[in-house]
Amino acid sequence: MSEASNGPGQAPGHSTPPGAPAPRDWSEGQERALRLWIALARCYATYARAVSCKVQEYGLTTPQFGILEALYHLGPLSLGDLAGKLLVTGGNVTYVMDRLEEQGLVHRERSPVDPRIIQAKLTEKGYTLIADVFPGHGDFIEELSAPLSAEEQELLRGLLKKLGHAIQERDAP
Image 1 (cartoon, rainbow, N blue to C red):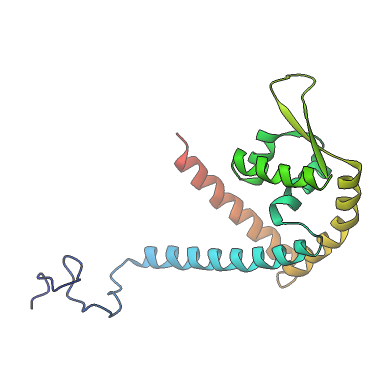
Image 2 (image 1 turned 90 degrees about the vertical axis):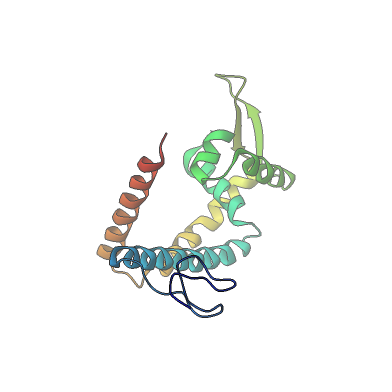
């Protein structure tokens, strides 16, 4: 069979038999970018899993902790602002807020400036919880980052921000 012909289950233009690895016919730049993506994805998954396990010790999910932490450090926020800060949908924020309200950790009220806007606020119980756990959480995040020197942490942070902003600009309407 020639390289141009295709057997059953083969992609057009490839003569690799089914079940065999595909030929590595991509460029050096694509290889480098693919390896970067894999490293970023694996690192993020590992980091997020560790943080999620730690946050469960506080009796919270990661999204719940994110909302409590944002309200603790930034004060009352609209549900839309919370969604933007946490990079989630408005529906997700509403669901997480419902669970936090059931626990008595947050409440919602209309904005005094614009009654169309619903703001999220910490209750006394929510404030006490996040104030109690956040210092230890900061220590935990510092421990996770310890394999990198302070300079490496700042360099990586800057590079990740640069990459993220460039992708955002590329995808902007």
